[in-house]
Length: 206
Length: 79
Image (cartoon, rainbow over all chains, first blue to last red; front, side, top):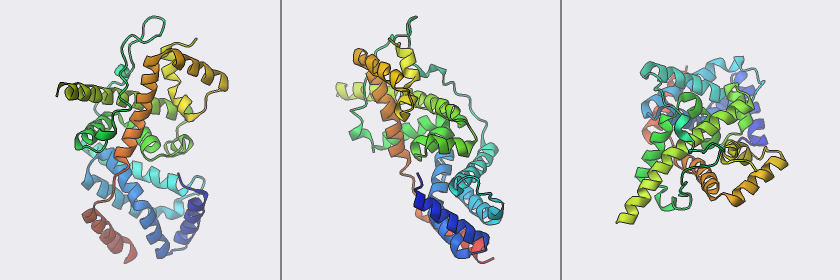
């Protein structure tokens, strides 16, 4: 989350950029390039695409800074431009594959109580966290999310933005952000559960 | 008592801290009596943590960084 100082710093830089300061642009470039690249990379999982998007976004910031209204934070504006450029990139590539999120809940009986055993793998992931296999599983699971859920999950849980900020960037109500976030987490939890359960079984056999 | 299904529906708000105190406390009462929901809660939370730790590590690779600097120099700063 941007601190008050970062926001104040952005405001000064935006004002200077509007006045034509290249130095201010350069500073914005240094401050934002990783955020732009990381968001785009996590959405596309492709280095070349993320590089193209970052270039597009930098050019858009430079060309369109005078149209930025300052009604919302500069960072929200940058995230929005980044997502638009990323969507354009994704559109040219593949059709949105349809994945159902309905199967992500446990089984309930007719009274709404759980029917299946829920294994608790939450304490056994430390040694696995930075293994390449785990990383791949997580990346693949996130890539499978439908775009609407994926973008909310990445902004909120990966980038760590507040629910309000995500709503502002995506023009969604708070309940809509939470509902998409929850669906994404349920889906990912299910995918990771398969993996960690299987891992535990594998380890037990060895 | 609230059921498991309701309990899971409330998890997002529970972690955001936006449940009213009464609902939050009936949720916690449910957890006391329901180990499967505790497992669910902990793995739900761990899912976010794991994904964050894995995916926030994205850095710009050096060759890309070079290209970006070059791009900014050519297309923006030296125009």
